Length: 467
Image (tube, rainbow, N blue to C red; front, side, top):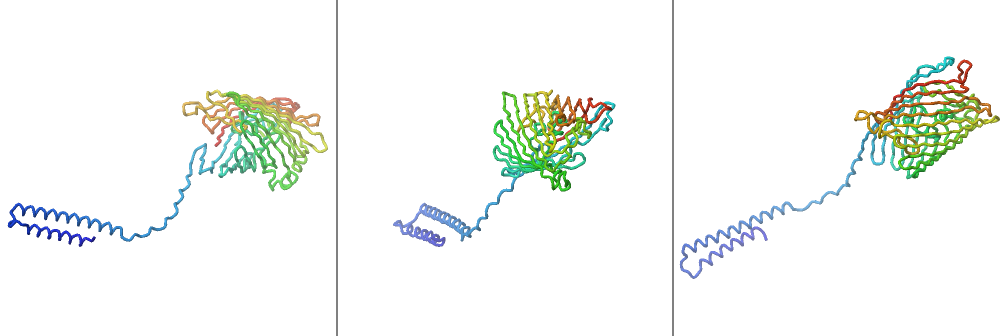
């Protein structure tokens, strides 16, 4: 029905209505009837106007809805941009999904003083200072269980690779490939910024413990940790500029190393028991050049007060036992380690080193953390500048080393050392160390006049930042 048709129909109604009224039987139409007719006409006009308004509205909708245009094909929804989260753990750490990266660095500055008997004619006596370590690198995760770590260190006036490896972790298993520690001992595995005193036990240096290039596997379940691997040598010993009988292209040395840790909880006490075994084939690495020796505690001193003569060694075998525990503010740790050097055509000497230590936090709420088979660095319960003094720890260590084996004709001397250490950690990542050490020697490699049995005293302070 169109607008014109409706209007015509309305007009027809008006015309019909008029004549019907006009031809009624009454001869004359009075005034009241005329008024009623006018009212009826007005009502009909109003109805027509309403119909016109409805038609106008209908026409407008139709115009808007006239022939629809097919919408363009929907494009695939754009993926949201990955979100990178930033956190602070002594340095920036960036995380995106299961991938992350953290900047790592270490700064250690030492000032030391060595007091020796008047007859010791050696330049090691007196004051010395050094940057013990300047280290920079990074570590992170690549996703899907893969990770990495790369650190370089300026030490002893050279730049060396420290950690440089990729790893893969899945459940209790951890596989590492690259330059890393070969599980020699508890004291060697503890970070140098987490030790109870400034330098590690004497036997770790004397026996040549260091990071080496290798492949290792670790398994950890509850209190049990098993570690094992096959290693070659340190990067500086297998580099091309170390060619010849001492290393480089002719360095085909390798070692097999393993460590087993049992770390149960006994009430509130964390206990640690471990043992390790190591076999190393030096092959052509050290024909007549292998020496076992040690400084008088201080790294800034290059003189070795204990030392064997240069030996021809084609293999080494060593093993150690460990025990440690943490209970609140108190901790203890101790190790014993034996090394045998195998000499072709000569008797094989066995050397021995050990230490025992106790430590106590003077500040309440602080405790030495333990995880993954090693002791760590505490986060102060009451940091300096936030209403507390930081963490203050007092440590006492006894350190023994003998490089004597008279049955094999080797006389490298003996050491009995007592070390007292005070460690202040005002805030996380920053520490200050004050150490005093007394080293008593028998058959020292450096004579005091005609005397080789004497004692030396060492004082040292260190400021260290680790992030």
